[in-house]
Amino acid sequence: MEKNILLEVGLTEAETKIYLAVLKLKTCTVRDITKECGFHRTNIYDILEQLRERGLITIFKEGKTTKYNATNPNNLYELLREKKAILLSC
Image 1 (cartoon, one colour):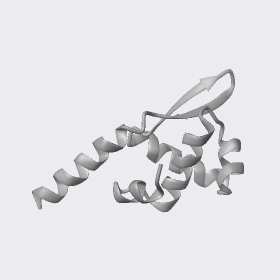
Image 2 (cartoon, one colour; image 1 turned 180 degrees about the vertical axis):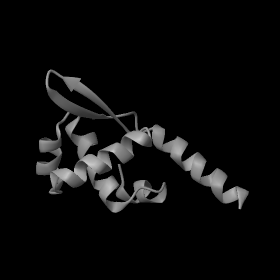
Image 3 (cartoon, one colour; image 1 turned 60 degrees about the vertical axis):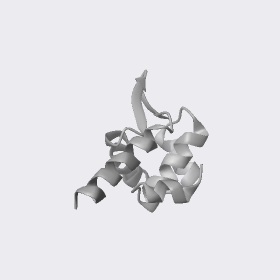
């Protein structure tokens, strides 16, 4: 997936890097994401929550461990439709 597409639908640079890391890693932990993209753990939690609110990742517990998955990348089309609707209403 291209970084430019993610930026075009309204993701920030940090959201884009973390989303791509989760997409690459499949099922992962914050520790895995930290190793993949180099962000500090505390920042990652906030960004993961923002991505969850946008419907781009899911969060689940496996024992005591919290894990993250990327949702179907087709959810990006919904973000693009929302962005277009906002632009057209102005």
